[in-house]
Length: 111
Length: 114
Image (cartoon, rainbow over all chains, first blue to last red; front, side, top):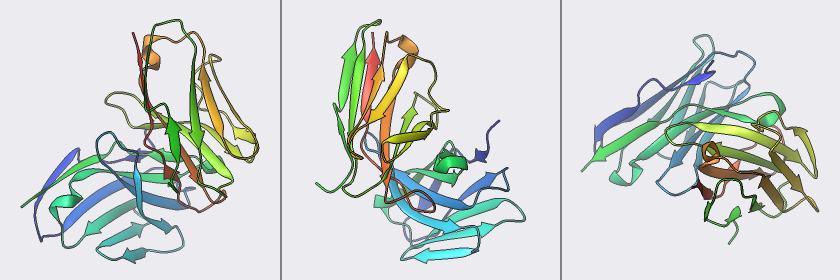
């Protein structure tokens, strides 16, 4: 069973517009969520995180929203830039601190 | 550099051989994690170290897989009698401590079993 789901395998956005990446989870015990960006042949790069006691965290162009009742989180990138084109993974902290990852969303930002 | 370092970056070996993958975490990070990403799959947890002990080995796929960490720093992941299904990118991550701290990843070792 997949505890963290990213239902959109890909997303295409125009440069300057907002990118919204979505993630759903099933386990209400998750208490910490993260977003990573991954380029080919590189490891995931940490972007932003949010604790379950908050509903929003912002860092520059990146904002993560958490809706615990819906077990849903989203990453907003504003404005989107061509360099943001990558695979984005959401992850949740499970028992013993291991991260449980979604399957990723490929974001393409068109110039 | 200041990031997580993994070696080798690429490894090609014949089925049945043993392989050893190395991870140097960020200095001062007490928690260390191994994950793998198989072709077309997401990242899959393998094992977690806090210091030199491994509280969670639940993700190791079989007893052919083992890992150790010495001196609270370097970790090695060993795969014995490799099989073709072991082909994947093996990723190491470290964090400042366990708990609600981001894990920072190395670039991985791409393992190919012929």
